[in-house]
Length: 351
Image 1 (cartoon, rainbow, N blue to C red):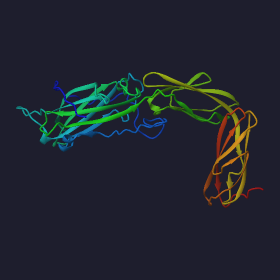
Image 2 (cartoon, rainbow, N blue to C red):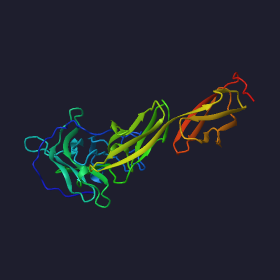
Image 3 (cartoon, one colour):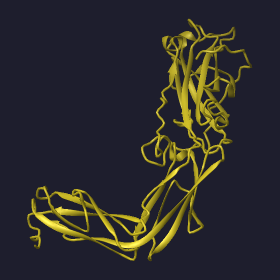
């Protein structure tokens, strides 16, 4: 990854606070790297060549977060960080001022063409450790304008820095990949096609890559209702509705998905408390949809049909969950669950 650099004017740059940076890496569907059919897997750890490590240089990146998420291709991103160097590699001029300087540059990994670059920055003595010298840098760029040339969907940029004119063996050089993605593949919507009257249900966008690489618009029956990656609502009365989601990619193209939703009534009937290791019965019921209905039990018991007889294998104080999917004649499906407590003092199940 090492590249030759041409000398440029030496300046001292202050680290600026990054504005408008999207998110940090976590594990839910609304944070970078998660929530899509694919998950960003490239490493975010800074890397360096041998002279950098041998001479005990340090690199800290404070912005942007990694993986890098681009909401729009034209968004400006602030890159900021700092480097440290031990005093034994610092060169001084005739006036006793440090002359070692560093070059930091944001580059496109595919061919290393520059997106934005920072002129050389001086090392100065660290205010927190007198044995170290510190160089701070800040710059801006629009990495969303530079997709991978092979697929036109991947964006993996690199914060790249090289120490020039230091009293070292070789040229110290360090970089940090800031991977991120947008994709032209159509999204799906995850969520049930049926909802229980008056009960809340949630739908979410399911794009090719992570949910935060997009902006959203949700519509219910033609009216815009939300701009989040997920949408939760309830319908108080029976009937058929439409939920639509528009996912806007980083290159400002968009993808729309419409789902037809039916609200009807569904329930699991039967005991909520049972004795350990006994056989009991439950049944599903539905109304306000299109008859006939089909019933599929999952969870603790697997069964097809409206009525379920099940002998639990739980000890006193435990619980199990029965899940029932009810589908009406038109194909709209509701999923409902019931937690059943297991207690030695529970009533005896009726025959």
